[in-house]
View (spheres, rainbow over the protein chains, first blue to last red):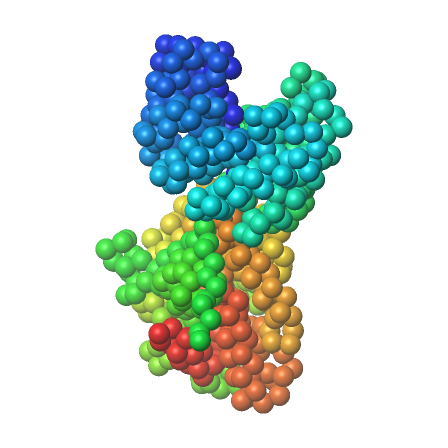
Length: 262
Length: 311
């Protein structure tokens, strides 16, 4: 499981402040805390607080690279912001994200190829958020077609079924889980699957319990990677245990510690 | 048309463990032995690196052996009653590059030697032979806790491999090995979960995972070899997939298991065959160190290893 830490995001007040003052200490501390807690990669998002994401994104990339060589997910809906980050990235990168819209794919797939970056494809489009599994799969097929046509390696594609909050679209959650499973069967080699976990509990509570319960179900559905808060220890313990039960790691009495020694 | 090889890309690598220290490294050995370091499954030379061949250690003990078959005692002649002479025959006549010494004489039932006497034996042996040493306790937990620190200290700086630490009795072993600069053998009863747990417990005491060799416990051909084989294979697959807590080389006590079988006792030739086939099968499952008894079997297996690695 690729664990992407979600905490470098301008939506959080500490990161908003860091972006405002270009205070790299705050960012680097947050990066190292996430890595210590088990993050394999880091999501970098300037968020709405950033006045100038074209400057802030490359700044984030630079300061994060000073303290880690882990992969970076460049998170923006604006391809120009992503490109600004890619230009200065030395670490492995993953573009987060493209929607299933031709105009987006036409820009982001070539960028991903040029910078040898991974690419997250979210199954939404300008027409809106899909309402069921079939619509999600249709959008996934569209992304896959584009990716294949443009010669981008499918193994570097991460499909995101777009997780909806439990208090908004409770009737869709089972479909979302089934979609994860079907993403893996959509082509050979399969694309990878990813979710932004915290969406499930947006506006609901207790958030942590909802997050970890849903994560267990998603892992059992074949999830390959997840964007989450790695500092939530119970969540991480749940993830490690779910993977253990699925025989991804070998059991021993100290399996939680063993996983963290990896 | 040749079918293309299906090659796996592994993220993990097995630790390299060095046994023996030369003079410039603070020891007095004439050679050192390196095991492990693979980044692929056994013998898949085209898939990944296999920097070190499996190595054979000749098994000796600090007293005349009590459980050696007649064929084995005959192979070493009268020297077998004098452990130091026995060790010299292994090295000088049979060209052993590594000895595995079992401190059998310290066992309460087999002489009950004191820690001082055990330490003295180690010092004398180190002065008589110059190859690296593996030192094994007698298997009596309480006595091993007294003896092994003395043996470890007597061989300080020689970078020995010391064992066998088990889940109920690993702390004294680990502390000694840490203090005297050796590496450790972690033994589990054909149980991958315990093997992993023990490696974690030992590394929690401060001994790095790179200084652990796993004794998975084996059965001889016809006596559970396939169970050991599958445990070793599973551990190796996990290690190559990135599980550092299982990325240790394996030591297999081949001679002891093979010569216990009734088949081995049937005829001298069959004993040698049994030990040889047990060893060669274990090489296929990833054994890095083979502790062997009969010089003839050791010689056949040694030639076999050379042939396997000839490419």
